[in-house]
Image: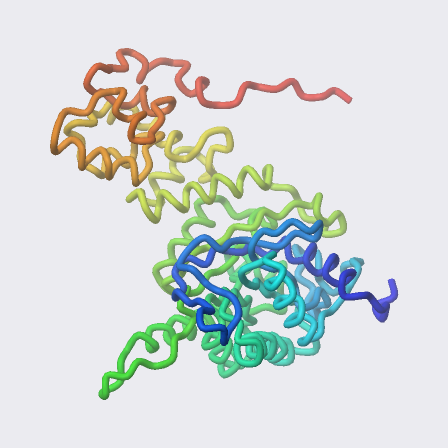
Length: 414
């Protein structure tokens, strides 16, 4: 492979937007509202609704999501862009990223930028170029759109601080669920340094909320907070281990989100790492379990004790798996059950439960009311009673799980 090959800007975009698909991106909820009214600036950033990526086939997905470069001096075994990987390499200059962002915004393709990078020369050299990109966008182009910056934990604190003063959200990857896995699969990366960098971001963000003795607020710092990404399936960590680490990260660093990125050898056949379980389905179940821990008042042990190995059931969602394992608590009467129990009913979401609690103060809830409130009784009907509805023996029926799990498939013999 000729690493000195010269590519056009469009060729670089195709390579580096494709390489960025392994970086989990995020929505811009939580950032400050900004707009370009007055004609002195470009772009806007609403409080919510800006998400994800710009695809190389020309479809706009709101954020221009690219790597500055997929060259990397590290050799993490799970990363398709590691130094030993035989992939097509490219690199944007600082001015090229700025130009692309502004050009795509003016064409109404995007509302913001998601920028990550492989490590070139050194962490500081790479981080300096990324900061220069954001600095030019903000100060020279007056770009007011959303910017998510993947920061490098080994970079100097001064550079990370400067990044937080320019970007809406910072993210620092913890890489893998355990320190032992990082030592085995990414030995050049140090978990202690990653945690220190995340703690520094949290401390700086907390300090930005405090007014001075004169009442003046300090400059905003990463107003949309920080997030992290964890590679799933590259080691033997169970879902209980993964979610336990996520729980500690949320509480310890006030993260907005932990992103789970499914590893699959299919993406990178030279990685020679085992396929632990169907990667995308496992990723999906982890996101569901993460949501239950954060917003549905579930404990980690409740979710992960349903199966003997601490892994989530891939065939059914974790709330339903818990309910099936705890049928003695059901059915619940939706007219008298407390909020905590209603949140545990399969098929009931937070908004629906809020509407139910508000409505039942006025009158008795009936079966058909749930549909009018935007809910579905497909899952819930086996676990609740309501005006005009009782599940009878359905809750304890032997085939209840089979009603929700996908039907068995005949494996191919060839």
